[in-house]
Amino acid sequence: MSEQAHEAQHPVLSILGTVFLVAVPASLIVMLGVVGVAFMGGSGVEKVMEPEEAATVAVVAPPAAAESVAETGDPAPAPAAPDPSGGEVAPAALTAADTGSGPSAELMEVGKAAYATCAACHGPDGQGRKAGPMLMAPSLIGSDLLVGDPDAALLIILKGIAKENMDYMGMMASLAAGLNDEKLAGVLTYTRNSWGNSAPEITVEQAAKARAKFAGVDAPAGVNRAEIQAIIDAHR
Image (cartoon, rainbow, N blue to C red; front, side):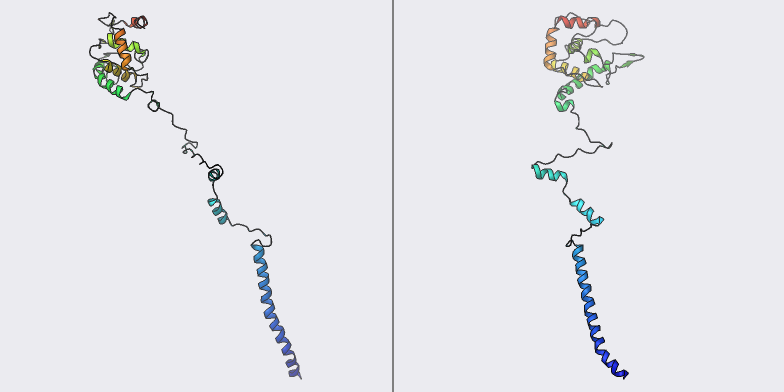
């Protein structure tokens, strides 16, 4: 009797088992599909970017300069080079050579060669050559007579300076005969722009004019320092 009941129930269990094996996997597949669509945005759920993905997007995003070119058609200005202090490097200031306002290089070379004669007393460094405890001649560095009014320097070279005391061992003699106008202009331009001095160049034309206007100055032993300005004013 029990064997007949067991045989009657066996087909039912077999059918239920088959349904279970088919229905459960199918339900799982459907659920996974719904979740996948929702995860990718099909159901309005936003995709959250991982940190690595966000970094990649930030790197490839176009910079503001590129946007400026796209909008205006003009390239954005290049940024200034970084300064070690953390700021930006300011444009370099123009030098006298850049602006053309500095002394002529050719005239400076002529003057440098002509200064060899002057160096015997004024020294190769313009500080005055020493003669024991004294100097042969005054320093040319910062000299008002040299870097001031060009006529003062031209008059001194052309006529010399009278020896009035023993402040200096040497004597400033006239160099008018030994220097032509180019060398006269050159040596003054060189000394006015050497050893820290800075003054406008003396042109060859200025030298020629000074030679002509001071030609009548009678000072065979050189002009007195106290009379230099008066002589200049009288010949303007």
